[in-house]
Image (tube, rainbow, N blue to C red; front, side):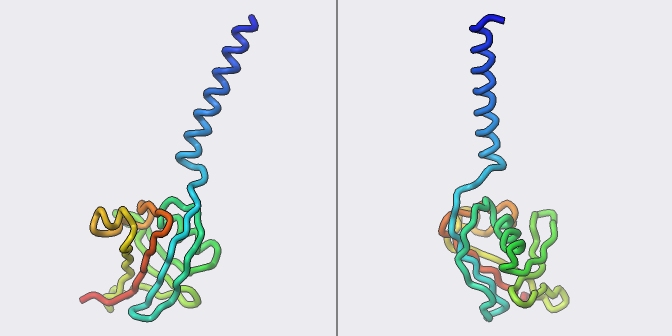
Length: 142
C-alpha cells in the first residue's frame, strides 16, 4: 500500500472519529452546567426550596438525579403524555389522592418552553435552562 493511501485512510478515520464524538456529545454527552431552583409545596406548606447545580437536559432527568442523590423523594409513572408525578417530598413522601382530588402540578414563570406553550410539558421532555425556577404543588382540585 502506498504512503498516500495510508495517509488518506488515517485522515478518513480521524474525520469519522471526530464526527462520531460530536454526535455523542450532542445526544449522550455532558450538557451545560446550570443552576435550577426547585420548590416543592404541599398545599401552602413549603417542603423544599433549593437551588441545585445540574448537567441534566430535562426536568425529568434533574428530578431523577435529585432522587438518586437522596435530595428528594419522588414517585412517578409513565403516562401517554410522559412522566407523571404521583408523589414528592423530602422527609415524607406526599402522594396524590385521587379520591380526595389532590394531584401534583408544576409550573414555571421563567422557563422558555413553559412560557411559549402557556403550560409546562411533561417533565421528561421539558428542556431546562440556567436560572429556571420550577414550583411543584400538591393541591386539591374540585
